[in-house]
Amino acid sequence: MPPTLTVLTRNRDFRRLFAAELVVFGADWFVMVPLLVLLPELTGHGFWGGLVLAVDTGINALLLPYTGTIADRLDRRKILIAANLASFAAVLVLFAVRSAATAPLALVAIGAMAVAKAFYQPASSAALPNVVDPADLTAANAIAGSAWGTMTVLGASLGGVVSSVFGPYVSFSVTAVFLLTAVLLTALVRRPLQAERPAETARPRPGRALIEALRHIAARPRLRALITVKSAVGLGNGVLTVFPLIAAAHGMGELGAGLLFAVRGLGALVGPLVMRPMLARPSWLFTGLALSMSLYGLGYLGVAYAPWFPLVLLLVFVAHFAGGSNWVLSNYALQSEVPDQLRGRVFATDMMLATLAIAVSQLGASAVVDHVDQSVVLAVCGLITVVYAIGWRLATRRLGAARTAGNGIPRARRTP
Image: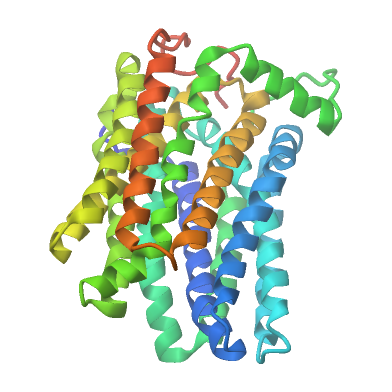
């Protein structure tokens, strides 16, 4: 098996697709960080930041079942390009947000970007196995799984610096350039992003296509288990709402909050790269998934009672090391087991469940954070994840290794 990073140097198409995803994730932070500061300043109300996050998460979750169907029906390259162009147009709306009266335009823009992301995510995840050779899929997943963590560290930090030094509208300009760059990179990918379909195969209507995918999942216990994996970490995601409070409790202020988010991203970056060898051992998969969920929860149980801020940072890193590993392990398993013609819909279902879990956790934490100590929120979120992990492992203990075509790729896949 080739070293993990060599797939970037050997495979030009994967390199371009991965670079485009990095740019898209970075663009998110160059919008979100400035808006979370700008809107309260313009309106005098802090709830606008929460509205932005709710609109971004909620719209994405609601649309994913439909957009996954589109990812299986239409040219995925065109979907990725169109989604980034739509996001580019939405970013231009943000330049009109200059006062309290125009603040609602920010929600319109973020809503439009959330729609675009809902189309982008399942198409991108479903396309990955088509741009790499079978032997490179584990390495490609480890690298792709680190994209979000990389841009959480770099994007959030740089987005905050650019916004604080040059102002939010310069950050929006950077976002616009990023999105156009992603369009160019995606257009340069030469391999087809989905397997060829027989010309005579009729395409079902979106509703029927979604039902087809749900029946496929329902009939396969392994898939049912795999699409519920990310929900464990999602249900513990309410911890993010108390990051500023954790920093304040340790006397670290805004610097401490920034460090917490950066360490979170660093853990999500390192986890997939370190845990890559587990991708080659299907017999370890379910145990590894259960351990990653449990470690995330235990990390935040530790954060709830850690007396020193350096220890808090270490535990947050450990938790998101586990969370990043959880994400890439489940993604690889789904890519290996789901036929190409269903992959977009299955990934959309997977992401929808994870996103809804995140939304529920964050709303729950937001509802109680003003009434209980932050350590209680942290402990409850961590405990929920641990209990979920134990229950999930007990429910899946009889499931065996994946039945794939020897190289980890389902027999239905056709290598371009």
